[in-house]
Amino acid sequence: MRMRKKPHGIERLNALSDLLYPFEEIKPENITEKPVVKLPDPSSVFTDDLPLILEVGCGKGDFICAISERDPQCNYIALEKVPDVAVTAVEKYASRRGLGRMGCNGGWIADDGTLYPLGEKCPVAPEKRGNVRFAVIEASEFLSGMADSSLAGIIANFSDPWTRKSSYSKRRLTSPDFIQDYRRVLKEGASFQFKTDDEKLFDYTLESLEANGFTVGYCTRDLHSEEDTGNNIITEYERNFMNKGMTIKKLVAYPKK
Ligand SMILES: C[S@@+](CC[C@H](N)C(=O)[O-])C[C@H]1O[C@@H](n2cnc3c(N)ncnc32)[C@H](O)[C@@H]1O
Image (tube, rainbow, N blue to C red; front, side, top):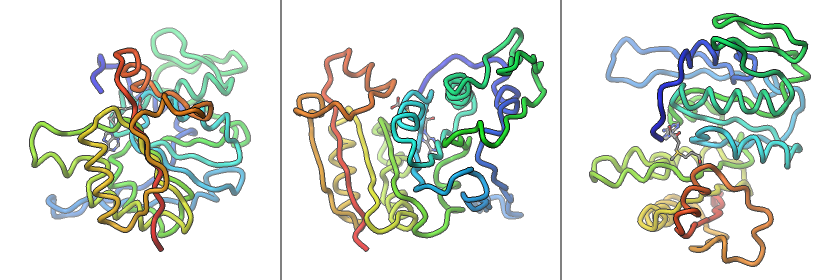
């Protein structure tokens, strides 16, 4: 996702850090090894003990805001690796929950009117934080810290196809390494949902899922021509592709346990 740099993205994220999923990243001494990520149990992060859904690559957050309002019987973690993108999602979620709005010079004006200048944290009471937490991190790192069979669902919408070089295929959010991680962290009966405009990425994802222990239960190459699309939540990228007349592909797959 290309976007202009957000002024003070990191400081603005810090202002709303109560809406971030806390994690500890331990950097190994050997720089070629990946950092170890330690995550607290979700029951210590969310107020209610509800099924947990993970969105990988949430972008500017339209989808996670809409689904968390529509399906409040779940908790959600939204992962986005680019801080300047994630800050838009977090601020959008906060303002939709009535937790305030951006003030002048990057400060945050809380729901009671208090202005928290840039760099200061705005405390959000646990009961006001709602059912979403955001994590600004590379998805594979976050997944490495997740317990086995801990998720009721994973959603990946319009992830980058990385088609320019074959060596880039490992970066796809549906590469075999990612699919194996998803299989490990999904509970029995849980689902993996995927939407894209990209035909090649869709074919690649179907193969990757079937080769790595998933059964595809639903599959369409033209989602918006289906009779019942009332349930579909349109993402930022989906809207752009639809406006360009492109068809949207969707699949829902289940791990074989
Ligand atoms: C093409 S955008 C789609 C955004 C949104 N899901 C939508 O449908 O409008 C993909 C987003 O995924 C993020 N992303 C890509 N790979 C990621 C990874 N490995 N970990 C976390 N976020 C990732 C990108 O930074 C980008 O914001």
